[in-house]
Length: 101
Image 1 (tube, rainbow, N blue to C red):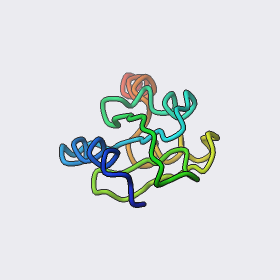
Image 2: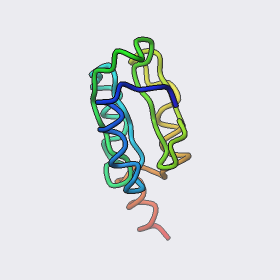
Image 3: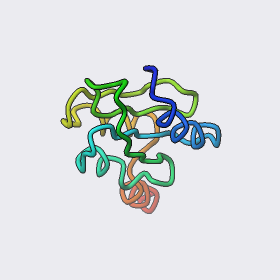
Image 4: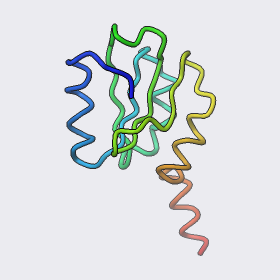
């Protein structure tokens, strides 16, 4: 986990202490935020401006504080896969899969 500005860390620390994952949007990117839209029950999306991480656009932080995905641009390459690997299928897909079993 990179060293975040204290204000950003305060925003991230609360959901992590509650056992929730965080998708930290450092670029104010609709693409990054929408990637987790159907996982809001498992992943809290936080948008913050953090001067300590100028090369990062986003971080997916597991509840244990480890980074599961980091993006240097607003390109979300790998983010949907990381979200699915760590936090399951999106809500709509999960409901459809459960209905078929």
